[in-house]
Image 1 (cartoon, rainbow, N blue to C red):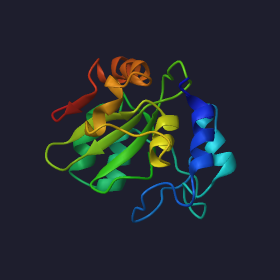
Image 2 (tube, one colour; image 1 turned 135 degrees about the vertical axis):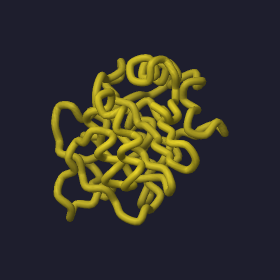
Image 3 (cartoon, rainbow, N blue to C red; image 1 turned 45 degrees about the vertical axis):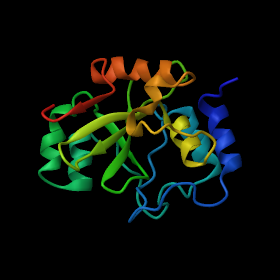
Length: 183
């Protein structure tokens, strides 16, 4: 049986033995709770608030270009700006060094999850479907699930999580699992 949503996050919470996410220079502000947050993230926040910095004010949901501008500065914010209409409500998640993890709130999949995207500016700007939801993101970070060597784009070929990944690819990325500049 494959877990999704709150059940998968419950397994991740049970496996977490300290900071579950790779440290970054700073933790992002916590997202404002609300009905658009996936139930899995609300479940995580009810049990562990160390994922986000509790001393910062709640993080606003930002259009993708604004979030990239805030995190990486120019010219990156301007380059990702054309994707802001498609990804109008994004929340920064911990993880990555040169790249960022972004929860793109919007049309949820059958498990009630919104996609987690990888934003990378190493060579050409890149956006890819990294996880089909916060549930899978948390489970990978806590060691409950393992990814394949396919890097950012592993979930589309996964037997258990592939259908959800493909849903998000269709709903958010025009059927592709990633986009490269120019967008």
